[in-house]
Length: 378
Image 1 (cartoon, one colour):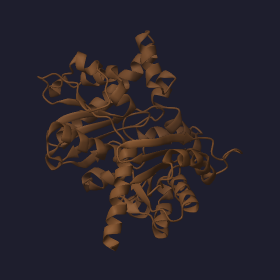
Image 2: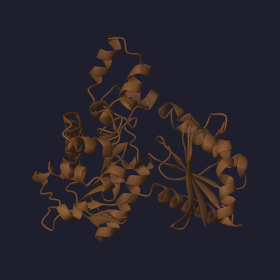
Image 3: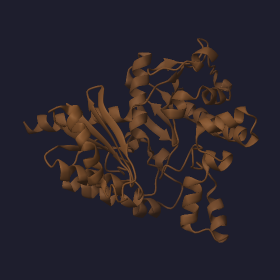
Image 4: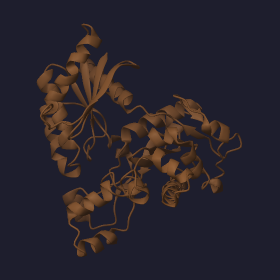
């Protein structure tokens, strides 16, 4: 089955075409909204010509969409219908920068290929298994019942995929697998996995909560926002400050981890401090989630920074010696495209690097959902 995977943003559209494990084509269309590519439908036209050459007469069988927010309704991928589109749009207030753009991509595909089945794969779905003690905030109940304020969690597609791959790598049945999964990229989150399911995660009502990220602050005292509001900061100012000007960028002047590490190696004190803060924050979560899962069987690093920055992994692990975690310096420096152990034989738990593949996971979920729908209708 040939699957087109689409990740639609407000001004960009990322795509990948897969047949099984093979990637046939991929690309990124940017500057949507400008004259040369006025909308998402035009973005699809830009890569349709390329697809025709690559597919050589073959056709796309289904389209899988990354949809950021599934709210409380969606706990698994679903075949897209007009009612599903309306349901996704009703979640727009929870993800105003993402869900509307996701729907634009869905509508553009329906316009271009009206007969092709489409599947929505939700970034929040993996975290629908959080117990209420983990997803509730200690605020008046009305804020939840009226406004839906609760912990939702994000990066779920990646966390789900990496959980499965890590369990397989260790030869542990998923239903018996306990782990702490650290998805570290420009956006970063960590998830507590018990019995193969998410039971807690660092991102909350929005992707802003939790770890120090590229441009996001992560955890911060809410009173700081009240203080800044009284000092004249508008809601828009605060949103920009916390989501786009904080994190590594706020501490070190750049959100590129490679640049921060290079500056730190050169003696830049601000860069060194930024790395220490980010590593310390993650180490605290790892310790807490180790307790939450009743003893992790593994600590797993994934995504851009998690997979490629041996120095940051080392910095984090150096603060987890109380858990008996010990990295092997030589293994930690090795690079690879498959799952691997980077800890010593004497480490109290294995530390793994497991490459994520969100597009592959979306394609797999899309094929399964379309197949199940066809079987049910036959």
